[in-house]
Amino acid sequence: MATLGLSMIVKDSARDLGECLASVRGVADEMVVADTGSRDETREIAEAAGAKVIAIDWEDDFAKARNQALGEMTTDWVLVLDADERLDPEAGAVLPAMLSNRQAAGYQVRIRNYVTTMDHRIWDRPARANDSEYEAGRRFPAYVEHENVRLFRRDPEIYFTGRVHETVGWRILERKGQILASKLVIHHMGMARPAEERAKKLVWYRELGRKKVEDMPENAQAHFELGVSELENFGNAREALESIERACRLNAKLGVAWFFAGICHARLGENEKALECYHQAEQAGHSSLLSEELKGDTNYNLGRFEGAAANYRRGVKKNPANASLESKLGLAEARIGRIASGVSRMRRAIEKEPGNGELYDRLIQVEVWLKRPRDAAETAEEKLKLARVGPEDFVKAASIRAKLEEWEEAAKLLERGAGSFPDSERIRRFLHEVETAKMSQELQGKG
Image (tube, rainbow, N blue to C red):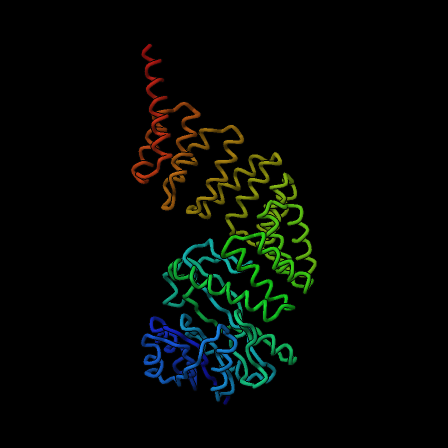
């Protein structure tokens, strides 16, 4: 029977390591933990769990560190985890068949990254509402799933490459080995950590990404990863575009790079160029639900409402449960004259996802455009019942009432807002204006 070993690199991982190692109990025949300089109880926790612990120097290179850990392995197969990850409890049921498959050199493993909001995504993969059966993951509202080669044969010719976002996948493919899909799941908790902790890690990863590009200047993937990091984590669309376009030049078939080049152009207001890049992405075989949505957004921004509606409609067909897409389709339909259908869609979207404030804003926009201020006022005030609203939401609702010259209702809304956001200068200033107008109206009525 084939044997399986766990390989890890860690540093100051006492918070997580015990649970991680417990998740492979009864599955792993061997555990090797390479410590890169911990100053907490990491080493003691690993040894207490039965792991072999080795000390290695950290040289700003994840691949080098992981390969040192691999060098200590003796099992037939290797599973790689980070300390903030857990192997799914069902792994024991699926692993025997995987390890006995003589055709496989490695497996793509599904990694479920738990996140705190539905706004998260990894590259072009959006968050999903959490339906996890995994007990420790149930407290999170959403997750984003991606795949990575985390299970592979132990072979001196299979090793990690890449200073960051390291992988054995390239080596397996270079050797003409097969990487198969699998049902194996890893649960990742790190993306749900406090924002300050994640921000520090992102800065560190950006620096490693820059060094990776220096190491591998002709590698399209390295340039792409750096560009996406610059775009998604730091909001630098112009700098990101330089890296991503370099990736496109190095590998014109890298569809996901063309797709993110399109996102960069769109964020820079270069909508025609964005559409060109989305087309190139499709030509290279990259198509996703998000690509339909972003093409729709770009066409809408260009005033091509028929084209936007077609994009959104294809997206809704792919995922009828997506409330944001249905709302955008309703907006586009309204703009091309299908008023009843468009407004109906936007209301259905709110019914699907009543906690999504963006859906209310979109409907308010249409109701104001249609010169239906009372409908807009009702929608704006319905939004105020949500848990997550800001000062601007109270100002928006009050401004609609003010346009109707319903000063008393506007004042009440602003007083509620002032109670929730006592430091909001904008609310206080608008409340003063409304009260002045209300007083003037009363005096005119007396006169």
